[in-house]
Image 1 (spheres, helix red, strand yellow):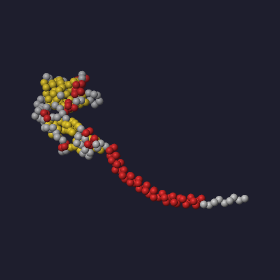
Image 2 (cartoon, helix red, strand yellow; image 1 turned 45 degrees about the horizontal axis):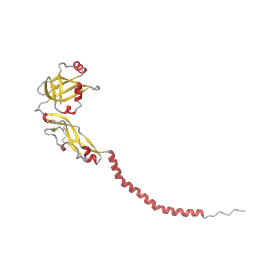
Image 3 (cartoon, rainbow, N blue to C red; image 1 turned 30 degrees about the vertical axis):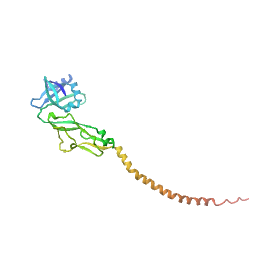
Image 4 (cartoon, one colour; image 1 turned 180 degrees about the vertical axis):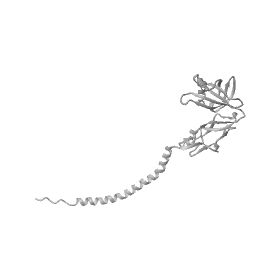
Length: 240
């Protein structure tokens, strides 16, 4: 991506405030063999550029004073409540110096996996950005990972994927971190629990029914004589 910057002659709080009022954003370019240089950029153009993922994770072409140079976006300061960029930092890129960057992870085909399509699980993206180290020429805009082989109860680790050529992961002491995990949904767990409990419930319901059937004739046998005994005595004839 390419953008245009302009040299900034004045510095300080007052000068920066006037720049922002006029629709500009103050910034700085540092690193490489040159000295740190103050710059200013059009605020609206920068605002729209920052909405693009590539502006954050790829090498940028900066035009400054009629010359072009390669830089990386290193830091952006936003106003705490206004939609305004307060300051922006860029770093010059040396073709022979390794970079340390965070690049986004792009996961694809999870809807086609057995875990989602057949087993109705959820796929949890544990890592959305990966720290990497590489030369500028090898810097990827993003790292793509295919999830079509995921199954229930499975996790995808860093060692399970192939990184682009020349790229090394920086794991900060974690040799093989989890990138993606498969999680069973609450509805699926409830359905499995009900299915497991169904045979026991059927057996419990069948047992009392058998006992009731066995007791039914005895109850009828006792009830019949009692009814006849009450009906036997006749009424005495009325006195004349």
